[in-house]
Image (tube, rainbow, N blue to C red; front, side, top):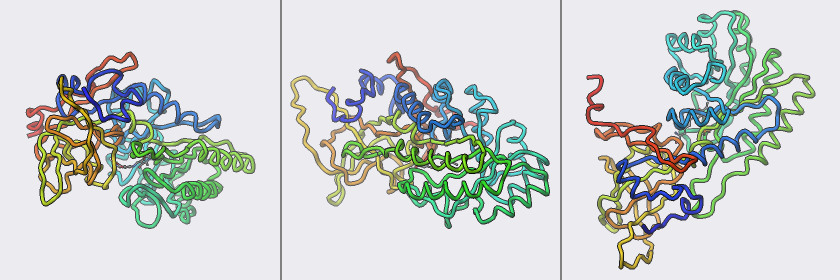
Length: 418
Ligand code: LLP
């Protein structure tokens, strides 16, 4: 096999396995995960703060495959949840209630009651949800999500603080929070924030923390301080764009929290909720080139990776590094020449593309495409749109063995629930 695979070759992603053999065995498209990388990311996150009571809660929405969750648990990383369904998966993966943090948004009363009955710690993110929490669970303990007034993220759709988002309670509303808490005997045990996903602006993150720390002064019983997730990974490593230096950012965070704790004589439990940072880079999505055409001067590489398989590029114009894998034909010259092309999927919409106007080795039918850093918000956002099946997921273990961790869907499953 002949590669144009700068990233997976460099980091030994396939641990010596041939992507063609993986596709032959498990079908295409295929999510491939590397256990070693997943574990490394967990370790990196746990080292971010030296604080004695620091906990990492992996944000399961990024990738909820139960086998990956078991590995994450084995690395002593906890989880967050945003729905009762996620709690169900997490408990099946072996997490107990105390390891789960629920960060709710617009729950029905029924779901709120069910989540309360699960015995997990809960954050509510509006005054009306706080009131409902009080009605259902008088005298209960609750965390409140604060909107510090500004946010940051890789796309408008994933900025989750500031003026144009449904999330959180304004930090100027602390007295209203206290009023509701008092009338139901609620104990506000912590504050949380999440300013957005893949935030670029470190200053906004720091300023938000400062605002939350000053809001903490209003809640003397609060000891949980949850700084959310959103930590970036570079999706453009082939061109040399490096990951953010999180350790530098967290030295600053550490100092802010230490100073606050000293001057307020209060010990805090610090939580972060990284999703993407933990699971993005341990995943590569493989797909097959089925056809190639030129339309009005534009070259289209048709693949089986539709936006039912990975939605990020269609939904947020997100960028992913792409690799091309070619089977070596004996006696053939495999010199690579590059050309600009668009990589598209098989869904009946023009927005169904994986890469636009991208310089890649000239691709031929039957080549395999690798979408890099597809382990976060890849499978978890997949669907059956256009009657297409969700792909299989495999894991290359620490021992280099490959195992199937989710079967490819079947036509029969398309008929479930009818
Ligand atoms: N905590 C809360 C409350 C969140 O809403 C999220 C993500 C996270 C933590 C984890 O954020 P992360 O560390 O993964 O950035 N589908 C989008 C991302 C949506 C993120 C939603 N909330 C994408 O593919 O970019």
